Length: 435
Image 1 (cartoon, rainbow, N blue to C red):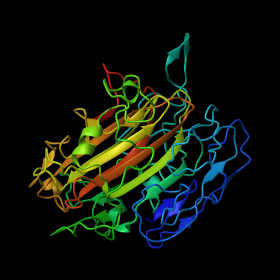
Image 2 (tube, rainbow, N blue to C red):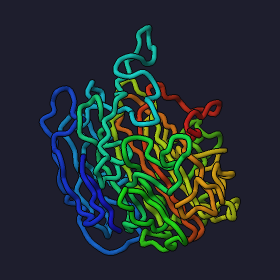
Image 3 (tube, rainbow, N blue to C red):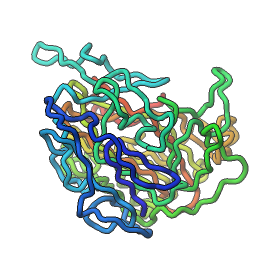
């Protein structure tokens, strides 16, 4: 598997798929002890070539792909205080996330930070107002990039007031045709504003990931597919388990399963939303593509969100069947561990997301391979966080029950939410909302 672990502020090239190290002195250090940052190959990672069905990148096992070393910065704290076996090895993050220098935020065409920022608002605690330090004026860096994290608003160079720094980013896709950084998806133009219907939610590009091959971009950076689909085969691993730390097992009631979000074991899925569909699909993640990163949560910041849209050839024929392609966004936080992408107590699959907003024959699907199938429209996925922690997020898309009938997901516009929430059986408050 060609698994690309990026050093902080790094670039993936579609042409060469080579690791390119960038700025060593980016943000994230704290208490004035910046001292620069460093990166290098962990001697346990190794490199190699050839396909593998092991989706875990950068661990001490043979990944079979080209894996670059861990990166970190000088500072006072380690990367989250737990071993998640996620490919981060044993590196330290170097971020003192309790400092005033931790950052985050949102910006971009159609979204805003979920609370007052730059010290203008926050939670009231002990008679004092807790200031939210998540920046509300993010500086996009995706105009000319082949870095998938930049495309969704992460890992840009800049000051703590306008970027969201990331640590230990991993992007695992053996097949380079299963992801693109696009300025447009499909050919439909919204008659109301004269802009593409499927366009970036922030900056100039968005990340497109899928379980089947995607066409090349046109000269304008648009991803348009006319006529028959390219086909279903990919060289991404099939028959795979979920990448660590994802787990389909229920996490409520201390791992026994019961009432979602109650007494989470902080190891398995506390939404209890994955297990039924995982078992129904045979417990295999086919044509698996996944990516992961860590980011320090700004002071006074209790949540985050990102936007996605889900398209599938399985709409509507395979609703309520074992063929149920899945998109997972997994949070590993002190406040919550588990799947963030669920609706009606089910994960983001063909069954759970039906009836889709756009269905076969709708003009909004023009120029995509889904003209006879369906798509959700844009959704906002919401998560919870703890100020000062090093939040780890993992995303995956894969076929279930087969390796045919492709699914494509658009991902963009990661941002902080100052107010956030604490999920409970009364108010889950995380999950997805239409936007």
